[in-house]
Image 1 (tube, rainbow, N blue to C red):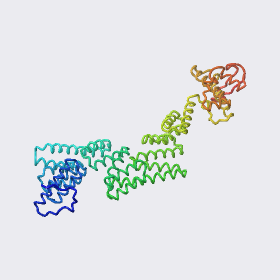
Image 2: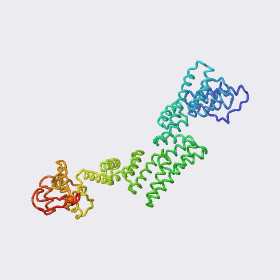
Image 3: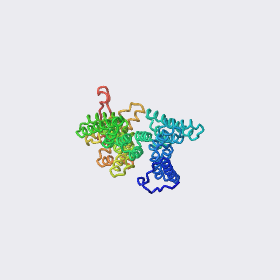
Image 4: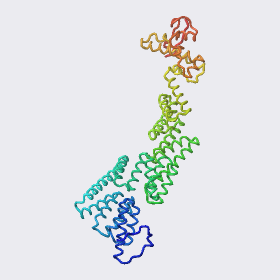
Length: 500
């Protein structure tokens, strides 16, 4: 048989009308295709198998050979069509049924693959390859079943696990890839989900499922406007795509409600803003990043409304959804500062400073650490029962009241335990007055200096009775020379001080 010149264009080849000559020509093309196939030059092999089919379109083996070539070129849908045409021409063409089954497997249609392999086993019961492939089809069906159950139960990790294993067999199945990508998005693994969806869109830009998943990733990353564009495009490709329709509706509703809340906040209508953010949080529990922002926004409105504990809870909810959300840590830390929970504030500011080492964050951390240090000292303002903005006169009045209240002579008839406790309080009142009545000491105390370490109050020559005598102008030591009348005529607690 004469060799066929492969460089001659098809339209310049001599036209042959004799059936025998046409068969010989077709066989020649097939042989050349086989030669290229054996050298793994699949594109050339495809061209010659196509020439053979053009000359002899009723020959099942030519379609079978071209199907094998298309499979090597990863053009599985075209390979499936050729395999199906081959078995239509020859129902006993075993290789045709086997290749059709493999194409169905690769495309993720396990039921159809099972039928093909069963047909092969009818033709050749001892065919080991068909037996093995049939078992693989059964395994694929089981992974599908497990994935469907997992999705129904919202066990998205289970679905990803099943789809990863299913795709080892059905590597060309867009349906499995989309399901995996959707679950990755629902798990917050957006870059992986986007990668899968983008790969499909590169091959098929009109794939509505891939457009939906791409939009879903953007939606969950709080890029709502871009997400809506993808949802709209998906609905344009598939008007009955229910998931895209629902996601598009949620995205628009979430954006509108959040913007209403923001506008109310800007208008200083904090109650309305708080309510609008609350309503927005009910729209889609799956949108983690947007909901984290909504919780943080509601915390801001709550803080304005003096709902500090609720604001702390909202910030905590935001952080649970997104533990990288710096603004939520900062807002919670400020609420902790406002409620004098300094250890918690320091912890949050440390987290922020570890993440973003800015001078502002460093200053906030140092301020919180200072307040924490101050909170662990004796709080002289609390001892006297005055505010931190108390005037000199208010401090004197508070000392007069507390010193008289806790003076040991007033409790001389009490039990030893009570006497000891009142003596301790009397001493603390003296310490507090010593510091807060001295402008320099007060300034150092307010700035966080530990005055006890400097020997200003506790120890040394400090004596609460001396402070008492100096304040009231009394004479003598100890409690001698002073008496307290707590008789019934004076009323409970309405005692008076008598100088000796």
